[in-house]
Length: 366
Image (tube, rainbow, N blue to C red; front, side):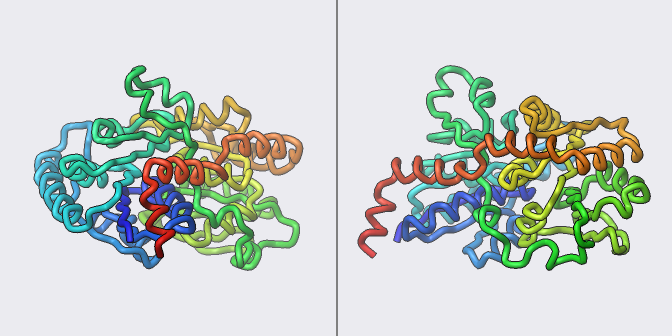
């Protein structure tokens, strides 16, 4: 049986698209899938919950600012490189697929040193630091947007494939338990799903909390607060949890509207379910990728973008205005469908299988 290694982590956005690609590959071939990630990151709990094989290595964060941890983390990155190299030497994978994040850099460099083909994927409109570091070791770079391809030189563009952003297959089939079966949604009430990220988005959470009095009785709110935020008590019109993973498809399938940051996961999972987006991009302290992601969706009529000066009342007005404008929501949903979230993982799987026919040959012999 052929071995394929996936790597990536640090946030859900560097895990779930990789899972989506793996789900597209698994029914087509017989393979042993191994995920290399950090020892304590979100990727470990997510991958182990799926029952997939997981191998941790030392990792260090890649910071663009002065911090003493840059020195200590350098040693962790070097240690992770040698740990990954030992693992890959033992596993002898057909290829390594990197979903990015600082976690992916040591395994990708180790794979290159061993002559193992590497394929990477960038979810954001702007390529992140890990993607740029991994690019030289990658045989192909998959990107979500045509505009991303144009960022690179003509020579690099030859090894770029515009695939879209893969989304887990669960989002394309009706959830076994719909949203109304998970939470006590009042009959006929519109549903606002608020996504504060896997860790928590202070600005999103605070703004939503202050807007709740104006939303009560008008829209049922399901709030993912993130693990670093103290959840509010549930009410007849509001429920919150630290993190939704297996329930996220049901939430988005039952949502009238999504409010949150503009990370790639939020954007493309909502696009898979054709749910209109109200976005508050992460600004200060970021590299600006969320703002450009949001602007790209807004330019296609698929999202409305708020700014850092948005008040709780303005948020409530935007939510209620969209909830009451079915025609606009329908138009936004149609634009979201054009992004091709449903086709991305299959397209990527087909490219990889075309480059590695030995995976199909191994399946045929089983």
